[in-house]
Amino acid sequence: MLVGELVDLPGLTLVNSGAEPQRSIESAFCCDLLSLVMSRAPAGCAWVTVMGNVNSVAVAVLADIACVVLAEGAAFDDTALKRAEEKGVALFKTDLPVFEAALSIHSMLGNRDD
Amino acid sequence: MSAIELKYAIPGDDFTRAGEASSSIKMRLKQMGFDPCFIRRVAIAVYEGEINMVIHANGGEIVVNISPASTDITLTDDGPGIPDVELAMKAGFSTAPENVRNLGFGAGMGLPNMKKYTDEMDIQSEVGVGTTVRMKVYANAT
Ligand SMILES: Nc1ncnc2c1ncn2[C@@H]1O[C@H](COP(=O)(O)OP(=O)(O)OP(=O)(O)O)[C@@H](O)[C@H]1O
Ligand SMILES: [Mg+2]
Image 1 (cartoon, rainbow over the protein chains, first blue to last red):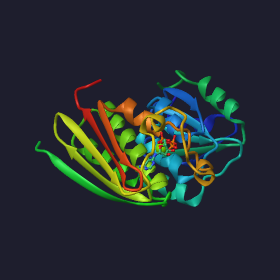
Image 2 (image 1 turned 30 degrees about the horizontal axis):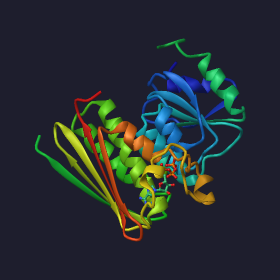
Image 3 (image 1 turned 90 degrees about the vertical axis):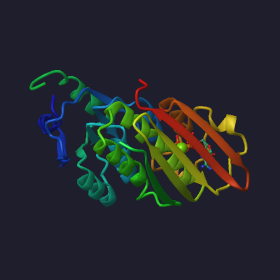
Image 4 (image 1 turned 180 degrees about the vertical axis):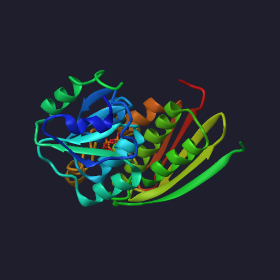
């Protein structure tokens, strides 16, 4: 599925559309420790986390992550939002727990337009 | 393409700017048309080094030399130094304080990532003097 299609998933809200809504999501990845994300997150993944600070946006940019999904009702802080706008990083949020958010994305992979 | 040198001063303890030098380096490599996998490896390695200087060394300097065949990265700081480099290189070892752990740092994976994503890595560190990390990534390596 495409980044821009994530809004169609129940409970997911778009926070920042990013520069590449047509980018394909290849996998879902969950982790809150930033350097573990750097180590393990595949390029092109939807990264589900509870870390909404600016460093998550930096990690997403540098590790070629397709989009960040903030789970558990957590909020991106203002610096993170501003940086995501500047860098064109797609952001979503949801009240779902991390696992359920990732599962719902996972179940849609390979469907629809890709 | 001839060789290019980029230099960045990294301020200490400013977590809102963190990753800016790495992002800028990444953008330059992209403009130069390097392979995305190569760029990703350089970007991640520089980021981990950049963040380490911010968190552990009160800032420092990054010098990057880009040539068609490889990119050389040198991170220099005059922070507290690393008493036991071998221990610091172990996955999971971290002295990151509570306030930065709350931001998502402190997995003790930064140095192992730098090793993992580069072809060569060398750390010279002296307690009370500072730390120099040199890394090399070959453009044609997989
Ligand atoms: N430039 C530096 N100056 C002084 N100490 C450093 C420096 N870089 C790393 N260290 C020491 O090495 C340890 C391990 O570094 P490493 O990057 O692997 O983990 P970390 O920074 O603690 O956590 P993270 O997983 O978020 O990177 C640090 O906790 C710190 O004690
Ligand atoms: Mg580190």
